[in-house]
Amino acid sequence: MSDNNKKCPGDLSMSACNQSALADNGSIKLARRDFLAGMGIAAAALLRAPDVLATEKAVFDKPAKVAGRKNLSGVIDVHHHILPPGAPEALQHHMAHWSASRAIDEMDKTGVEIGIAYPGPILEGDNQQKSSSARIWNEFGASLGQSHSQRFGLFASLPFPHVNACLAEIDFALDHLGADGFGISTSYDDLWLGDESLWPIYEKLNSRAAVVFVHPHNCSACIPGSVSYNRGDMGGSWIEWPMNTARTIMSLMTSGTLRRYPRIRFIFAHGGGVMPLLINRVAAFTHWEAVGEAGLKSIFPNGIEHEFKTLHFECAQACSVTHMAALRSLVPDTNILFGSDYPFFPLSYGTEQLAQLDLPMLSLRAIARDNALRLFPASTVAKLA
Image 1: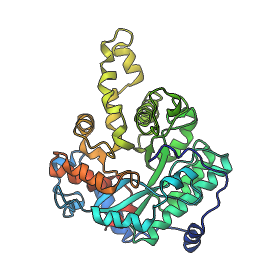
Image 2 (image 1 turned 45 degrees about the vertical axis):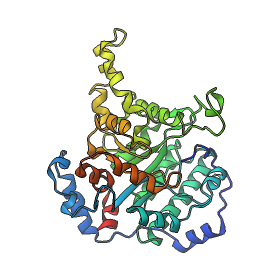
Image 3 (image 1 turned 135 degrees about the vertical axis):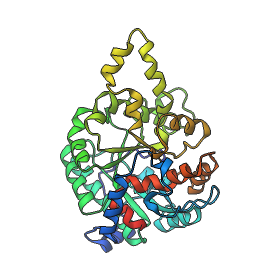
Image 4 (image 1 turned 180 degrees about the vertical axis):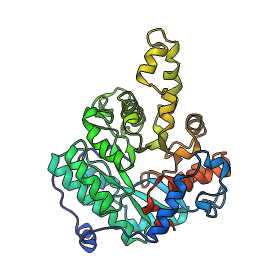
């Protein structure tokens, strides 16, 4: 996603076509086909052993839909941007050619069965404006799944860091829109995700065992235009966003947030940014006199490697041999999912990059599809049944 998406305007007026899309859907609640069957499948999946990749012939005992290394099918894309009504002008400019039908055409050509739609972060405005944006964006995102044969899931946007507004939107998105999870930014002004002021939000997300997709954005500490190495159109997505992903993961770890709310399933964009390259470095601080084993244990009681292993990652722009080797050395393949960053990167680029990796077919299938089936709630399982 382009880092030029900086504003969330107070004027939430919608284009005529977006108004029509919302009006046609009225009060939206995603249908659950074969709900009881889906719940049974989800329950069975939860009972499977953690080393399912090494022992199962197929998740849910279904035939594999990944047909071959060069011909992926049944792929689930967990990093899939959409253009919601009232989006910031910069986002409208960069996604001017986006439409749901065009996205589906790309999905059909590249073997992507479902895109988990993310309307984007809500970064500016007062509490009321953010709440209003979240509701409009999320209802629009949910309408896509209804209008287009269940080809879209939903990571509902939350009006961070406003606690009460987030609590209300979490319940609404899950109970009335059938959201698959939530999408948030790496930081909000000077607030990183491990800040204790956000804990009431995590308490709610933890109680719902929610999936939370974390997408990077600029932070006030290092604005791309203020650094000397910035040239031309280089923005935060070049260097700062991978750094900011690492910063917010560290914030969640050192604050104890991950240990306090273990039922939240976090997915970090772009393979966790630069964090996979830093884990072993920090772990080796046991040999640094200024820190030592006791000092490191006081910050990471279970070890930094253990905490990192509890997280999930999607692989948009992270399918290089170097990045994937680093990530797979730290987390099991069950914690890696496919992501494309569509439409900022073509869907074909993401699927081709994944296919070219020298991975066992079982791991390839898991990343492309099966891990998402195991991670998401019955609503997504029902769409694929």
